[in-house]
Amino acid sequence: MELNQVVESLRKRVPWPVMSKFLSHYGFLKGHGWEGTAEKIIENHGTAPDEVKEKNLKILSQFYREHLLAGEKSIRLYRVDESLMHSIMTALDQYKMPDSLLKSAYPYPLNDSDLECVDEGVYPVSIEHDDDEKVLLVFSAKRHIKEKVEIAPSSFGSDAIEALGHFSEIYGIKEYTRQFFDVLAFDIKANVIEIRLDIAANISSDDRNIGFSQTKKKFCSLIRELGVSFEFGSEINLFPAIDKLYRLKEGRVCELAFTTEEGSIKHEKMRRKHLCLREETYHKAGALAVDGHIFAYRIATTWTHKSMNSQPELLLPGSSRMLSKPKIYLGEALITKCCGFSDYGFVMNKLNSLVT
Image (cartoon, rainbow, N blue to C red; front, top):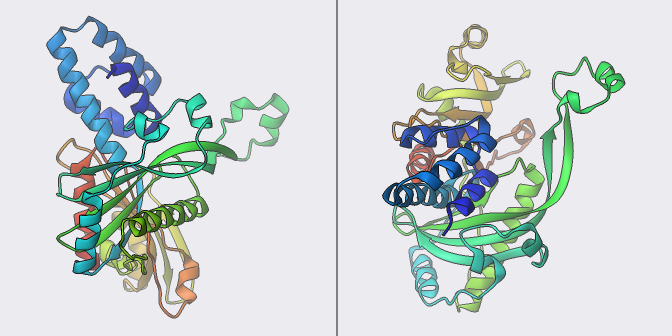
């Protein structure tokens, strides 16, 4: 295993703010952003003593593995019967993973030319375990997606720059094919199946829905071939966690959308990373004016986690359209900015405590 491969794989999927905290925690020298840092790590590795090379490679490889399995994920949770969970585990113990280009490259992504040789779809590549003793069935997927990309105004000509001068941010939609790593995590103690859809790109909610559908269909087909009759039921409803998270008075709320009793809709975001929306002057005054009677339907909360002084984030992406339905239901949560299993487990424990 070469350090260059590990660093390049990290660069492709780990957000720079997350990587920066990790590198600082372990004392790696950093350059300017991802590009400069990748060059510096590889350059320093070449002149380091053998024992340092081995140590650094082990640290970076483990971080890559944990981020692959628990970093930048959109999740859905499903309760299953204890006997059914036992049948699934027994079947997976006997499962022989089919060979494929994606499996041979795992845990690393294929290069672009090899990826072109793979048909779009979802492929099983590994069975592993995490720090919470969950069994992890890993899929590698080739998907065609649309990504919302910010466009620098400087990339336009002078006339266009002048015409766009009133816009502070400009975005475009980029379509391309990309490799993802999805995970089915089996919590045997709680009898819960957790789908961790890889969102290590700014993919849309429509693309996430397609991804969940593909991964569910693939697993159901796989497990039926092993003699277990299984279909996913309804996701665990995460909507009740939104108001609880807002009222909890812990963590830092960085995004909040809500309605008031008078029917107005508010959507607030906190740009300053060290401040919480609950304590922001405008929000406090508004909440006081309505005596705290606000109905939150979307919230993003982040915590400073002691493991690396990291800031994992939980987003419960409800919408105002949900409020008109007889039963308000949210089956998806986004867990991002995790440095590894510790951060991800920390956020999942918070979420589970609010929905059980």
